[in-house]
Amino acid sequence: MFVKAEEIVRMEQLYGAPDEERITVEMGEREWALLKRTQTRGRAHDVTLYVRRGDDLAVIAKHSYAPGVYRAPSGGVMPEETMEEGIAREVSEELGIAIRLQRYLLREKVDFRNGSETILWTTHVFTADPVTTVLAPTDHNEIREARWVPLGEVSGPIGKALATSHSAGLRYRGYLHRRVMESLARLEQR
Image (cartoon, rainbow, N blue to C red; front, side, top):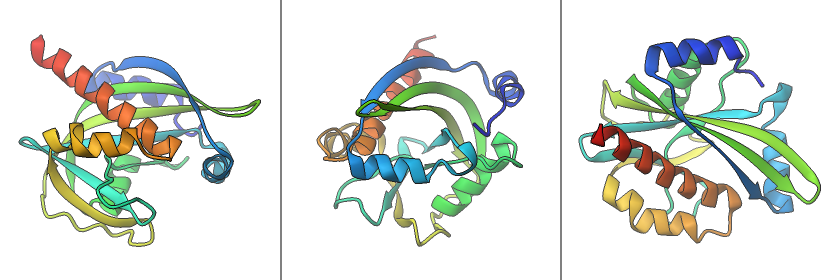
């Protein structure tokens, strides 16, 4: 895993201690092969960004996604990057904007499984405010579209599309969105 324990401690000191949970996600052969390809140099994590502009959330669609399927942007931190540097790079590639991190919201430990094989994965979820708001992804090979959508749409029709997707990875992203909304609701009640 690229993200070292001391870097996680530093991020918690700066942005708060996240909620933490562990789940298991069973994957089919095709998705499993894709996940294994993302593990260059031992990568076993992603950073996921909930960038909010009022009641809107910045979301992305990859070229392979069906119409109406969107999710929060995410990606890996490179070994030579701090988490903040990796987050800024991923947001630039996938959304084309600058952000200001607000909170380290969630650390989701995932056991991705395919038969008897398991990949231990960690998703680090952060909330952020946009510094710029015109979405213009720079990674056109990966990202088909980025847009602002109302949070209710992400929890409603987009969430339903994720939950019913044939893709275990997209169903995981739908689950992650529900967890993020629960964590945000708890924070607002405090």
